[in-house]
Image 1 (tube, helix red, strand yellow):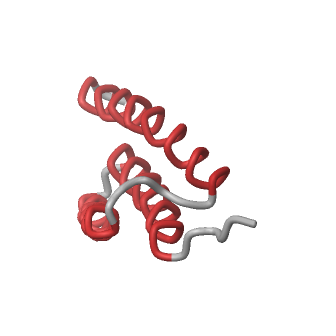
Image 2 (cartoon, rainbow, N blue to C red; image 1 turned 120 degrees about the horizontal axis):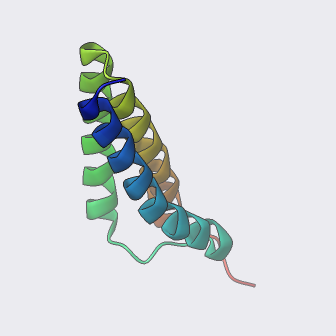
Length: 86
């Protein structure tokens, strides 16, 4: 593992930590406070970056973009289909 890989994994850890509370809060509340258009753009952007990372065979970027794509899709789901309150 070289220095650039270590930086990549460090970036992945910091960005993953940022998404965890938002995603947990979204699942817990069954809704998200972000605009749907932002959530859609973020999911598309993360997905495209994931495809690029796979093409580059760059594991830190594959992990990061897979994780952020999944988290943004969860948030997008609850943005489009919020849980009904009883």
